[in-house]
Amino acid sequence: MKHYDVIVVGGGPAGVCAAISSARMGKKTLIVEATNALGGAMNNMLVLPFMPYWTPVDEMHKNPIRLVRGIFEEITLRHRDMVRELEGEGAFYDRIPMDYFNEEYIKIILARMVSEAGAEVLYHAKLVSAEAEDKTVKSITVAVVGGTVTLTADCFIDCTGDAELAYLAGFETVLGRPVDHLCQPMTLCFRLANVDRGVFYQNMKETQQLYREAKARGEIDNPRENILAFSSVAPGVLHLNTTRIIKHNPTDPFDLSHAETEVREQVYQMFRFLRKYARGCENAILLSSAAHIGVRESRMIVGEYTLTKDDLLANRKFDDGIAACNYDIDIHNPEGSGTSHYFFPPYEYYTIPWRTLVPKGSQNLLVAGRCISSDHDAQASYRVIPFAAALGEAAGVGAAVALNNGTAVKDAPVEQILCQLRAQGAFIEKELPPREQQ
Ligand SMILES: Cc1cc2nc3c(=O)[nH]c(=O)nc-3n(C[C@H](O)[C@H](O)[C@H](O)COP(=O)(O)OP(=O)(O)OC[C@H]3O[C@@H](n4cnc5c(N)ncnc54)[C@H](O)[C@@H]3O)c2cc1C
Image 1 (tube, rainbow, N blue to C red):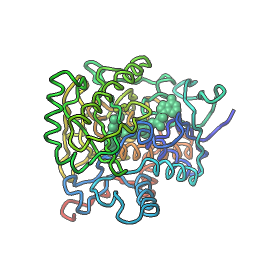
Image 2 (cartoon, rainbow, N blue to C red):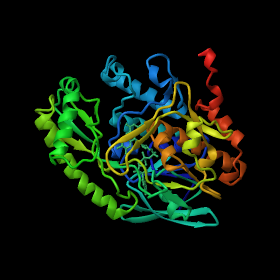
Image 3 (tube, protein in one colour):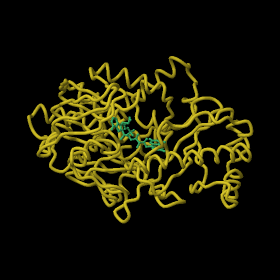
Image 4 (cartoon, helix red, strand yellow):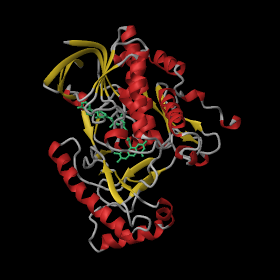
């Protein structure tokens, strides 16, 4: 049976950053990943671009202060270098004011960074069960080609997005809004090629109106209120984050399958509509769709601390804050149409406490990414890629610190974790200069 210091389950932004930081601290680290590449939702859910992670949010061209640095910043810089190396200066990415990325470059960069750090990856490996005793995970079993393998580690980090390991190991988890347990809707992202994007964007207002009319005529079943489109990094390719499946439980296998079936019809209807009515899409080709329907929210752990909407609205800074965040509270209506937003004012942000990464009473299991301990509203803010990465980096450091000190993760010395994160260049609250100096 193979043994590691640290096993990270899930190779999304959280898992990759967890594994890199753990391995860089000298821990023998393995990532167990169900697909054939690293990147998580960037890869298998075709998510794009990085949502804003700087303040002031409304002046992003004017020396914004990045709230996520550390390993995530290394990823963005390596991506920029790869773009320049392969496509030259003045490539698409240099011309637009957001953090766009090519997921194929990201896959290469993440694989390189993980292996340079000295961590291993087990691809095509799906966690299926866990053995735990007294809040200690003893081993995990993973479905692989030819059967299953059982693996042991001193410390585990659940970065599955679904808190799958915490759940299988018997830790308490919650799902969705307290009132009805509904999660944010699921979305299958898809892409169209051969689009005249300039014409498409110029006529967006008219297209939105035509979309509402088509819905009223019953030609489109999608409950989403409008069309949400982004440019892909490939010329003439439009990225659509616009389907919406409501009232399905992403952690129920039959519900999830039903969602995948239902969303196919939405893709068909949306493509048919866009080709027929949207200017710029007359010659569009349905190019691709994600390998997995996009899951914004699913199980979350019940941790040593549960982050709440009130914490966010108060811009609360915790003594054990290991990541800073100001992405808006962005809630796609779990019941149908509409998307609500609460935007943080410029220079305002909150921090996420270390304790939200620790399942209640956990001895050797940490959780990072979109399934840490919080309420439904708070999750709607930190759930995006940059902050998932920051949480992962903190979990990797925390695992190594706990092992170095011979303590349970719940008792890991937080000062050492913060000190190491600062040394790695990760953002720590006190680094933001006072407002008058900015
Ligand atoms: C439709 C949609 C659009 C979004 N748009 C944006 C956007 O534009 N910008 C942005 O920044 N964020 C966006 N997000 C949010 C963001 O993509 C995710 O919340 C973020 O990727 C979470 O990171 P994570 O590492 O926690 O989980 P994930 O990225 O989901 O990674 C989890 C990883 O764990 C693996 N895994 C899961 N279960 C197992 C298992 N049992 N065994 C082994 N491996 C397993 C998965 O294969 C995956 O690689 C969007 C999300 C959705 C659904």
